[in-house]
Amino acid sequence: MPLALYALAAGAFGIGVTEFVIMGLLLDVSTDLGVSISAAGQLISGYALGVVIGAPLLTIVTGRWPRKTVLLALMAVFTLGNLACALAPDYWTLMAARVLAAFAHGTFFGVGSVVATGLVAPNRKASAIALMFTGLTIANILGVPFGTWLGQAFGWRATFWAVTLVGIVAFAIILLLVPRSPAALEKSHLRSDLVVLGRAPVLLGFATTVLGYAGVFAVFTYIAPLLTEITGFSEAAVSPILLVFGGGLIAGNLAGGKFADRWLVPSVLGSLVVLALVLGTMTFALHNQAMAVIYVGLLGAAAFATVAPLQMWVLEKAEGAGQSLASSFNIAAFNLGNAAGAWLGGMVIAHGPGLGAVTWVAALLPLSALAVAWLALRLDRPTLGEPASARS
Image 1 (cartoon, one colour):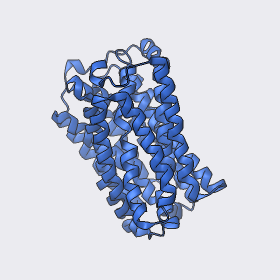
Image 2: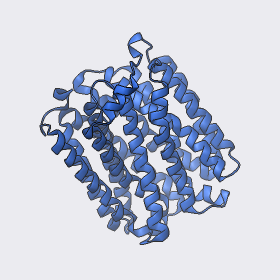
Image 3: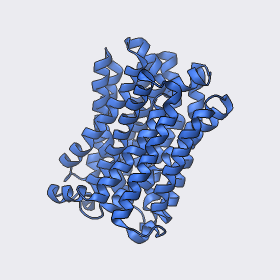
């Protein structure tokens, strides 16, 4: 794999830390800022909505920029947003700073996905996307547990100071390793791009992504309360358990990319089925500490096994003009799912049936995504066993 892919993974690492680390610090933030756990959980929703707004907006604005310039500008926005988080004096300032940092997220992964697929042979495109997203998985296995420990030991602001430093380092690595070439200039025509976005298979692909990932975040947003209040772990045990989640992310991400390179559509459908099964049976596993730890790892694997297949599926549906915009919209769809899941989990906790029901309610969402994906297939009618490379 080209070194440029590892540079993209470095940027993904920084973004992944700032997106996910807040989940291990919900109790600390809520106590320090004097808000409820549910209100603190909305910091995840705010970030996700920032991605939803920023992804199409910045992709359109930067449509004719060289892609390396776009990636560097986005890392600068990300770094400034995290600096503002570290300095935020109150809850709403923190929320605004999180939204600012989130603006970089969708376009970075959207443009980065297109860059990644252009760096490799056609039969390795999904694996290239998976490698870039490995930065997110490493963020979860290393960055998030360390950030959670740092925030619990020295205050949650220390975590955002550390993420600011990560952003500076990622900026430097992208500057050094991502090539600049005339071919990197995006030939964007907004009207034709929007026509691509209006295609039924593309829209249904976005809907599949939203519903699938809403199920993940309905549970993962509240993983600390689930592990402490239902399973009976101490707060200090949450960080080591998140290492297991990160290990599952790496395994699921790489496996999803490999399978999607060979059998794209079965990978999309199969990963959604597995995710629904893991979420549903996790309801029972949380009452046993050993099984709870195993299921945290399974949740990570099932969650990220969907990422490369869903991203590659949308890229294929938008083949030709509009790929960058469609790719960014699908990243926005992931984060719209994040926001919807965090909101739904909060509603289940605050208004019933309660914290213990979050997992089985979440399982209904990837099942809904499966139904939408099947409808998209009925409209598009691809050959289920056909390799992804043959269709790209």
